[in-house]
Amino acid sequence: MLAQSKSSEASSVRNCLAGDKHPKFIGQSARECFPEIWHIIGPYIEEALRWLADASEAAGLAKAMVPSSQTNGESDDMSAHHPASRSTPRILLAVAEGDMRQYVQRLLTSSYEVVPVADGEAALAAACQNPPDLVLTDVMMPRLDGLGLLRRLRSEPHTRAIPVIMLSARAGEEAQVEGLEAGADDYLIKPFSARELLARVQNLVMVKRMRDALQRELASHDEDLSHLTQELITSRQTLQRSAAAQQRSERRWRHRGAARGPGRP
Image (cartoon, rainbow, N blue to C red; front, side, top):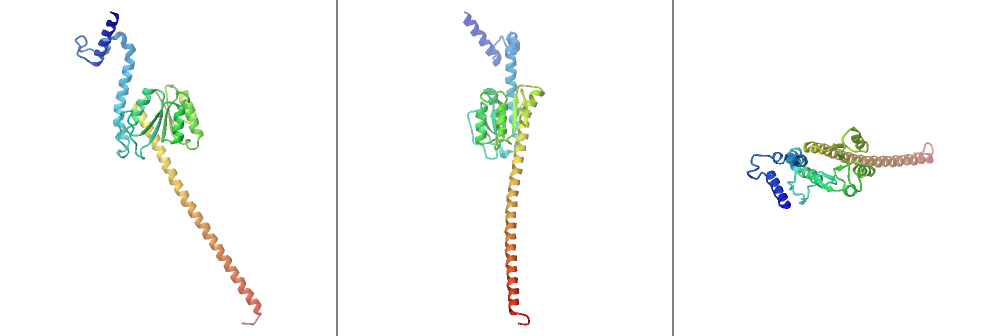
């Protein structure tokens, strides 16, 4: 009897939440149907709805923020991985919580190539193997937390310049200062909006790309300068050899003139 009662109550909850046209619930919201349990389940439902709204908003926002030449038309199916073009910025996403990791990946995947990992050690290995354009990491992670990952990245020459955004539930100036002092480029407090996340990611990725382009330009100028310096050195050596040959020739003529004696042709 108790089992039937619980089954009936569960069915009623499903009907109410799904909007079924049951006579008992017509015109009523879930909050009105079950006020005694709404204070428990309400925050979770509202958070899920907010995530869905953010994801829908982010899809359009991300397409507007990234040039069409860089979009790949990737599916939102988290199990489908389409190869991104070489011009697509790559983001290493390190978040232990599966739902949060999938949510953030869904926000970013239409505009970026996202590499998701569940702990700091995996993130460090992925970054060292193939440095990304940006690391988006949670502070709390198993094996190696976000601050530890940040310190390890900053200690390696080939990962030192990668921008890092820290995600944390710890609010307040002290927590942000701790992350920034450890070397983070930005610090985002949960819960955050999709618009804020995408804007901060885009800003740091653009700065990284511009810095990389400048470094390539400087490297090209250094190479050109090196070639010019080598040409100048070669020209100087040629002039020195020519001057030495001229001096030897003049000494031979003076020696011949002295051997003939004065007055001799």
